[in-house]
Amino acid sequence: MTAAPVASLSLEKLSTLIRDRRLSPVELTEALLRRIEKLNPAFNAYITLLGDQAIEQAREAERSIMGGQYRGTLHGIPVSVKDLFFTRGVRTTAGSKIFDEFVPDYDATVVERLRAAGAIILGKTTLHELAYGITSNNPHYGPVRNPWRTSQIPGGSSGGSGAAVAAAMCSASIGSDTGGSIRIPAAFCGVAGLKPTFGRVSRFGAVPLGWTLDHVGPLARMVWDVAAVTQAISGPDPRDENCVNAQPPELLRGIGNGIRGMVIGVPENYFFDKLAMDVENAMNDAIRVLTELGARPEPVRLPGIDDAIALSRLILLAEASAVHIKHLRARPQDIGADVRALLEQGACIVATDYLNAQRARRRFMAEVDSVLRKVAVIITPTTPVTAAAIGDTTVTVNGATEDVRLASTRLVRAWNLTGLPVLSVPCGFDRRGLPIGLQIVGRAFDEATVLRVGHAYESATDWMRRRPPEPA
Amino acid sequence: MDSESTQSFARWKQLAAAAGLNLPDSEIEAIAGPLDRLAASIRPVLDAELGFSEPVICLRFPKGEV
Image (tube, each protein chain N blue to C red):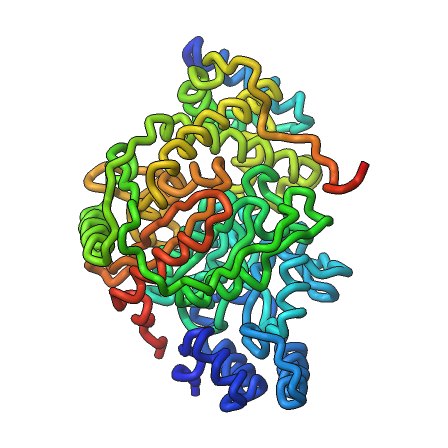
């Protein structure tokens, strides 16, 4: 029995049922653990399961709630955490053979906050090795498979999180995003994923990839759910010096206020070039829906985008290599070929080029800031194609062959340079039934507007209510 | 290997060695192509006039502490 119905309910609905004592956190957790046992062999979304711990947390949650100590929206809600985040006493592999036996003695801040909110942590999700890729085809722990079509990748690097959320193997998951690693799996798996503003969510206790590009954020099936989790994990943290010393606004308040009169920027250059036909059609339809909801599309230009893509690549290459250079020198044979090649490239970047890239980055940041003074958000596709087949190294986009990693990241990675909040929501399916994602870029620390746009769009469409087929 | 490729190979081999990596020639050849392409695309950006702008890396002190 896979217990699909209760597992598939939104976090919002589950939260209400638990708060009103119409659903036991223990029953819900047990149902999800049974579901994971049934589905994980097919999807490989989880790398480590915390069954006994989760049941104990669920019992504690039930005792608290029945004792009148309800903590709020996430109390009793089963979630998962990308295996990049330290979990005290539980191995944290970062998808790497090098960390296969690493057991941290403290929780990452996001894990602490989930626990404090009363969430139930079901397990650690599989990821692309060291979070350094977009396929989640992990050479050490196996490929994660897309629940919509198991021959396809789920995206990455938070592929396990995307798959687990899509297949209702958890209510939400925490991922990380350095060059699209929340948004790409969100798009490929047909769920919502938010890269919050840089500094909104603490990165303490997360294995880094690129210090000036890493962001932490949630994936969930509905935008309201994403907002609720973001609210719980956001806030100051002196242990992460990049974390802003300000409490986030109430992200759920006003989320349903609609977008009438909002000016939305639609780029005239780059973002709508070289798209798969189904992606282009889905985006045109999405803009039509947003217009019908009362938004006013405004063409905008980002002339520095090509430079920004190259800058983001160089900065990430250098930073990731700096993070892992010791392992690259000592244990290259224990690093997968694709990640090892990137780390080797990054080690060859000279300091002056890296520093000047970090200076040139400011130009693109200023350009986007200038655009966002005139529009509330910028709308683009999340990826130009849908999920590629596992093992493919190239994709074909309108007859042209592209490297799968470069193709999957070319519409997302520049936003990591800016640190701005970006939400990906489903906006359709291609002719093979694979999800397509829409990207909403907002002003710094204005997650509320980004979420409001996503919520409005979601409410006017039914993409996020569709679920992948249940495996036999 | 033509002259340009030879120079490229030598440059990346030298830089890899400077980073403490003892890479076989096959791996140098594998990374040379992507690095050359990235270098070609990014050189104009890095060589553009950047004035006295600072890199996006800050020395930051915890707020409230002196």
